[in-house]
Amino acid sequence: MTIEIPEAKASESIFTRDFSLLFLANLTNFLGFYLLLATLPKYITSFVPEQKVVGVILGVFGIIGLLLRPFVGRLADLRGGKRLMLAGSAVLLLATLLYPRGDDALSFLGLRVLHGLGWAAFGTAASALVALIAPASRRGEAMGYYGMSTNVAMAIAPAVGVFIVERDGLGYPVLFAVSAALVLLAGSVTLPVRDCRALACTMARGWRAYFLPSAIFPSVVAGISTLTYASVAFYLPQFSEKEGLGNAGLFFTVFAIVLVLSRGPLGKLSDSLGRAAVVAPGLLCSAAAMVMLALWPSNVMLLAVAALYGLGTAAVQPSLMAMATDRAGPAERGAAMGTYTTAFDLGIGSGAMLCGLLIDAFDFHVMYLLSGAVCLLALAVLAAGGGFGQRAGKIHKENVAVIRDN
Image 1: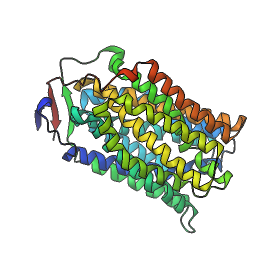
Image 2: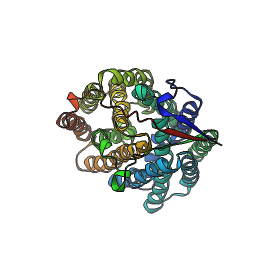
Image 3: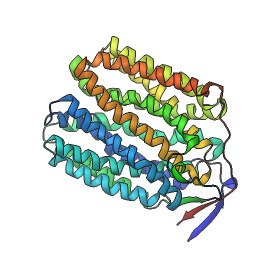
Image 4: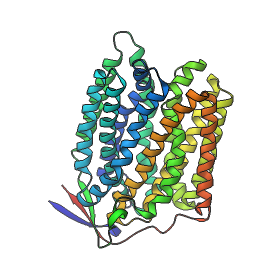
């Protein structure tokens, strides 16, 4: 059965049935992912000792997203995102179950490729669905709340992952089994979601159907800023161990708590003040956090950095994501999310490789100092692109039918 709902008359409520289901699906999927965040690099290093090779293995995950996400976004526009989410869950489940069989650089490289395929399919399709059903006047707020599912997972899973690995009688086999169970649950939660796509007269053609021009600028800023996220997500556990800073999982817990508390309000603030007015201070916070981590590493400073970096990320990510969809038509929001998430993955993948090279050539401290400089580069690009002079921008409110398939 197909139900047509005029977009202009859609409810202004954010937490609808489908939004809530997508929130839960994203939460469980990220729980499975973040269980591996602080533990997988160390697991791979036990088989592959060269940091630059480990950087390539970790970074290929993001490169796969770079190649796949534009096509997933286009398919979501044409066919709806639910099927793509379910296919992504299946591939993620397979990759997670196969990780214990990896034992050399080539096998881990193949597993990261498989993992990246599933991750790109699930995440892009889910984001496209959220962008389509979110009320235009509250899009920044909706993106902020949707992102909270990621942050709740980050607050819980990394520390739990470290606990499982270090606990006698558990270890990596249990870690991968729990991660796989959560991925399976994410697919199960996706099943009741009503598939959704838009029918419109105005749909991008040619290469614009895959890389939406109006989404390129915020995506470039996001991609640059995400280079620094790779330095934290992949290398902080090793840095923490080297400097004697304690359980790195606590960093991710504090980081995520700050994100959970601030993403929604900051997203709402970007709806009223404009996207760039929130993004710019967020980039400054992230730059300061990286410099503090490089120059004054300590147990207390690690938690302070987590809070400051969390505040910066909460300001930057949902605002740029909303900016990427503000000027997209309803039938182009999959392409907008494909463009945005492609840049996001490119930043993570390139960041993992570059950080590995910097650590080998210099040390962790230099790597984090340069990460702070990258945040300032993103700020310069935002200013050069006229971001400081933009308010929320022209929100696309074309009155078309949104098709929901029960």
